[in-house]
Image (cartoon, rainbow, N blue to C red; front, side):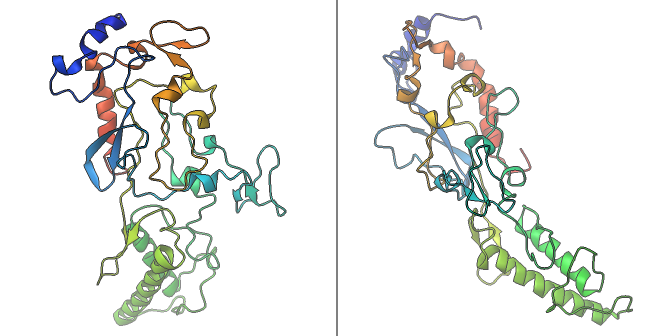
Length: 329
C-alpha cells in the first residue's frame, strides 16, 4: 500500500465502532493527543490455543500477568553485587566478591535481538542459564549433566547410565558410586542376573530423579513440577513465554539500540515471572509525538507504528508459533 496521510486513518478510527460495530479497539486520531493505552496479547501456558488481550491501565488489571509456568527473579539476577558464578567470572569493571566468584549480569547477557533486530531472540537454558544452573546429577561420580528436556528423556538417560555401571562397563571419566552394586567386568550373566542388574539401575535412576525434581530442586527452581499420585513419573508444566506483546504494532529494537533496556523495561524490583514490564504509552511519549512536529521529539504518525489492516498476517503467524510447544516452532 502507498503511504497515506494520518487523517485518512482518523476518518474511521475517531469513531471506529460507527464503522465496524464489532471492533474491540478504542478511538485514535493522533499518537500524542488522542490514542488509547496499549493492549498486550498475553499467552497462558495451560491454554495453548488462547490469546488474552489486556489493555494497560493504572492500577493494572488483575489479568495483566504472564502465566508462562516459568519461575524467574529478575531482581536477584540483576543484583549490582553480582550473582554466584561457578566459573568465577567477573565483569569488565572487575566487580566480584572476596573470592572472585560472582558475576555482575547485564540485560544483554540473556536478551539479544534476533537477526535484523526486529524481535528478541529466545533465551535458552543451554546458552544463557546452564553456566550457573548446573544439571549435574551426581557431581562426585561424573561431570556429565542430564539433558534439559522432557522428564521421560531424563529418566531414560539415567537408567542407561546406571545400567552401564551396574553391568561393569565403566567409562574412564566416571567414578562409580560406592553404594551401587556392580557385576564383575567380563562376566557372562544369566538372564536373571541381567534383569536384577537392570532393576538396580532403575532404582538408582528413580532415586536420582527424586533428587533432581524434589530434594535438591534442580528442576523446580525454574519449573512447575509435579508427580501424579500413585506414579513414579515426574511432570514438568509446559512453558510458553511471549515474544510479541503487541502484534498489531511495528517496533524494532535495532532502531532503539541507543536506549538503555531499563528505560522501557524496568525489572529492577521484579521477583516474579508473572510480572509484565512492558512500556506504557507515557513512556513512548517521552520521545515520540504525533503527526505534528515538536522540536527534540520523533514525529510519529499512524504509519510509524502500524501497517494497513492487511499487514497483520505476519504477526498473526508469529503469535501462532508462540503457542506451539518448544521444539515444534
